[in-house]
Image 1 (spheres, rainbow, N blue to C red):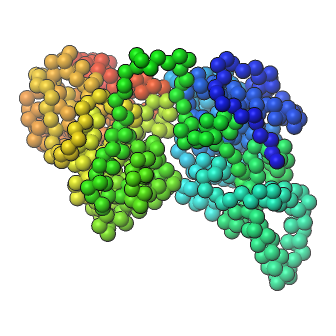
Image 2 (cartoon, rainbow, N blue to C red):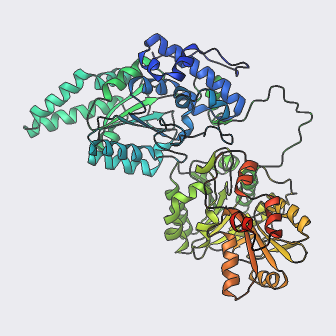
Image 3 (cartoon, helix red, strand yellow):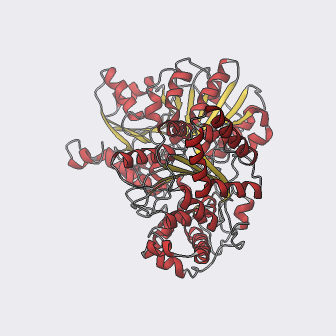
Length: 639
């Protein structure tokens, strides 16, 4: 049996003592000189330090605990960062960061100016490829392996793919290409029991050791050279080997794609991991090592609830629940409740998600309507075209997807849904700035990339009740419709049980003023309201980015000196651009200023910090309403 750490049931309250880790933090060469016993001691230290650190800051949790041994084994065997490790997906890299000189800075993770929660090339030379989305590692590692070969470098390249990322279509595209090109690279499939095969116990481990051994590899290659000249004998030998492997391991798929498959191994058995990596890293051609790990390993609450402990918030020392005010519902929960309510009255409704059941608020729906719920895994393109196929034959699919992930299915959105004017509703979660996950997860382009698509209508609710009503409106619409809403809790608005279809493309005037009119798209309404009071301005909740309320826009443009558009979306091509395009086409001359995200990536921090960095606060709106057109500040800050 492999090494298994002592089970921990609670978070450390004081910083653990980590003498080995302290040495390695300043000299990675120490790690490469450690013996078997010290490596296992180091694994305990890394795990304890991660438990302490993440409990102080919050952050991704379970996946990192599951790869402590793998992270140590990789840096022990490889000459990093000269040798390349490409991680997929990025939230399993906390141990990697701890081992590569960022131990003390882990206390700043996901905070403004602190460490990123994901690999980031500008943060460390050990982070060879930036990643926030999934299923990219094999493609990137293959590119690095080809580059090394092109430059005549003896550089090792390893892709670590796990946590469901192998289900993404891009991963299989890369596997197929690598099997054809045959670069020298190792893919490690970190299988934390997300779906790949069944562990057959000791026999599988025994054969895995044999297949990775130099003796077996020499015998295999020698036999190949001898028997390949006798086609019948070679075919028989190859078939016998394949059948033998298929009896004890789920690796035939990878063998057929051209990879030499080894596994599955116990991913928490450090000595075996080190031995296997030392053997496989020297092999030529594409290699695949399949390891089994446990998400949350060593922390029993996380092992029991890997979904709940995927990420955690900061652990408060002595929380006082008696003084804590109840929080408004999260937007994802508003969506989940609407989905169940609508499904109860319309059996045509189908819910689809690309591996975001919990994050998108679909748990209750999946339990109440299991036959109408489809989690397609990390396959955004498939999710959209699957919905299109359903819509062709009378169903009414709802695709629940994060804004940043819908980007990956853009062709399907245009070609398979909008071009055929199919009745698909897109519930776009995490629209806008998401906070600590940073630039890879901000949903700040959807208004721009959706607005240019014919047949598409786009709603931008400003609070949770409007979200519910606009979801109902979009669902009733016979054609492609999108409702985008933000991450996190709502404003506390009263949610009406009764659902009413709101007029498509009709805005609502919330406040009448003079000179300045503020046109708000989405959840920055509170900021817009505060600015409107200062400016004594007209305030309009636009509700729709497409179609616009053209009648109201003409009226407001003719009766005000200045318009200010407000949106949590990129400036380029967003809702403000739509307003300017319409008024220009109507030959209306009016001064327009846009409060939107500038042409820059906004890095991680809290949502409030993100908004300040992007210039989306009430003060920024007031500035846009008061600065003269010739002000240098207006020309540089207010675009």
